[in-house]
Image (tube, rainbow, N blue to C red):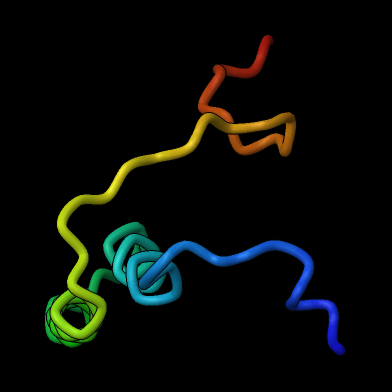
Length: 69
């Protein structure tokens, strides 16, 4: 078995992440982001997702705490 079996991925995680990263890019490409949104919508419909929620961030360094000067 490969290392991807360690932790289960949330449903439609790749599609949601792609859309968020597209929106965050400095060179925003609306058409690209609309394609990512369409892919997320398709995944949601296929998996019958009703609602998303964010998990509490562990100490991964991804928190939005401002850095000290």
